[in-house]
Length: 461
Ligand code: F6P
Image 1 (cartoon, rainbow, N blue to C red):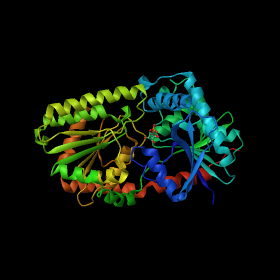
Image 2: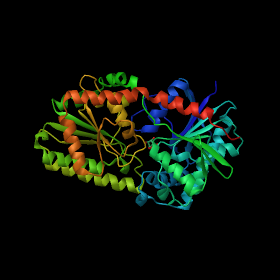
Image 3: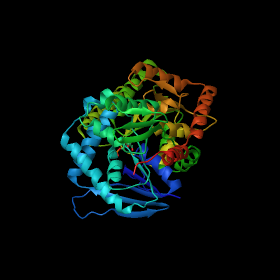
Image 4: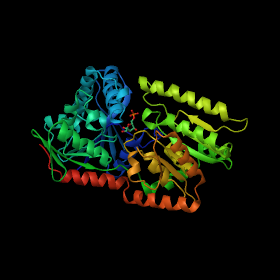
């Protein structure tokens, strides 16, 4: 059987360093890798200004981890620059936050070359290579150009933008050609797939052929939709272990009989936190019955705190939080608890189970595994309600959630009000319908279907 080689900017280890703040990719790929085993290559998360750096290799269970560090300039151009100040805002439909600099693109390519250089000696002829996310789009072509003949697939965890937005990056044709160098390119939703289809056919004037094949001047690839998911069956059990944690016990005790609304997001402008806070404030204003009877817990670990747009966001959110607490808190009750740090996953899952409402309202999101995990963590006899943005990839599958438009403050307030008052029978029906989907299409289904299609896809050599 062929060995699976996963390459992603972040790698997640199975040890206690898993604080739950890594986001969707780390959680999803960890679950998939845990089953198949193999080699996981990525950035160590360290910035070190040394020249002699070889990958650090470490084995945990059935996974060999190989990681490299970045130098300060590489980190600035590749991670802070092109990945998170160009591709991230653009792919999340925020060209207004894009800070383009051609040097950053050069740095992005150089780090991809560096990863290719360190990965090549570790590869075997029978490997299946699976590259993840917007940081590493050019890597597949670099490996092919270096003579790798294994199947190489790519999965994009973020949304893919419509052509009109993609065109705002001067290098968009290179990006499309890099994507077309993979044997299989996977997207989260039909909307993302459509963006790619339009970009290849109109942007490049390439051909779309039967069987989801694309061709353009010697480049060819297959593309498809593979919504990432979760370890549905295991999560209730994992959540149970979190009930022993000090944090969970203190939260539980402090709530008394109040209804808990929970939000868990990296502190990112794509998550719609401002609108979410405004909608909660409106709920307290319009429906005073929730004063003292509800509590909103927002966990939002700081993310990319050295990128300007994230610093601005943190200041704005601090102001909204201060305003809500100052206006509505009493001596013995605060309406909102806001925590800028991450917690272990089992603790978070236990907290999901405690919450009457999962509050997930991104302005744009590739999938959003918090939404799926919230559902899977519920008690079947008394489940909570998911209030979910229509703009999250997860909305396509979780159609029994209370859907809201994340820009419509009044609509979100109404969604919260409905969720907090929903009768048990309706909650159970909605939950069951979402669980049916999550059981059918779990993380293992995601991995198996992608890898099956990758092995069947015609591949370049
Ligand atoms: O595509 C989403 C993702 O790659 C997730 O892993 C996570 O949500 C985020 O982006 C990664 O954030 P960071 O910049 O901290 O690696």
